[in-house]
Image 1 (tube, rainbow, N blue to C red):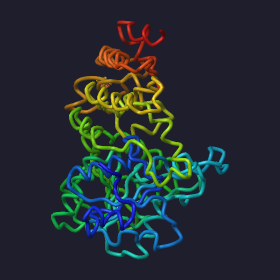
Image 2: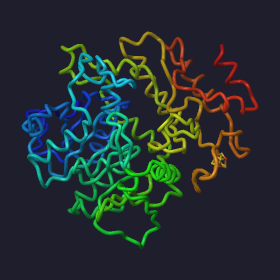
Image 3: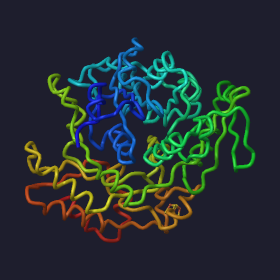
Image 4: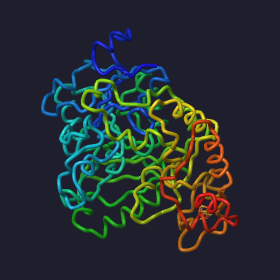
Length: 434
Ligand code: SF4
């Protein structure tokens, strides 16, 4: 299966008069499942929708957004695999010199706050086409937030971008539900019921269990109120227990629906088995390709979600606490493809995810009742209900090592050692050290 079209000519060659969705991205187009835009565009394709990609458009020129003309259902916008400000600046706010997500590693091919820049560009030419925003930048800025770069409180990115709908967390299920709603003729303003989305409302719907957060003006005036608000948000990241959250802005409201349900193993497999080209678009070869692929080219995604709750990490706020995994078969199939790559030297660089050694939810109850709101799974001491067991991960790593052509399998993703020590058997620890 070829790359999805990046210009009008390629769209017409596929026999499409119009794209269902035009996807504007802050990164170079890399059709590999470690890139959010690749997954979302392939998921839409698998569900029968046509998608054209506009990568790193010139944000000062509205024509750059008009490559495919008007999409039938809407524009999708993502700032990229990283928040654009993290991509552009070091923690000491020094401008970085390279951008691994741009051909040749060149810096400066996307604007600061890229999601806002692209949405404003679209609104200049297409006032009435739905704009749906997603990706990490939109996800972590979905409600009012402190912006380190400008040292100020910012409103929900949904308001500042003028987008119609925001998808947070991992978007496979949400995007298909939104596409179905738009395809059925629904007005985007009426799509207010999909899990994992944030929308704007002019009045409160009291018929659903809802928590009203402090208003934006209060958050701006009082840091403690912001801390209280975030604590409530953090406590409502679980798809089984979260309530709708409402953040008032004057007479308007931003409403966050509960997160999407975790993907089953069959659903995870389906996502990773899509026909990715597994590399950058060939138009970038002259510039030397896209450096970010090197980090993931010979690595395998094994899981999502994390119950580790490290205090520095925003992962739970994006992917949730419930671990979701791919089957051995799906991972082995991808490894077999990798081995055939002429550049593969026999080393699988990683088999992991947010935490490498989490291969199942912390406990059975998480899958029906959600994770405990009042306590962490590992801290201050490991919960007695936690199932600390590495046998599935060990079996997977052993199978990968047996594939002809594989010399070594490394684990580069972080390992939670407290979880490792909670396992009564030390087989994983011994094999890892060996
Ligand atoms: S019972 Fe224990 S392991 Fe399960 S979600 Fe609650 S804290 Fe985590």
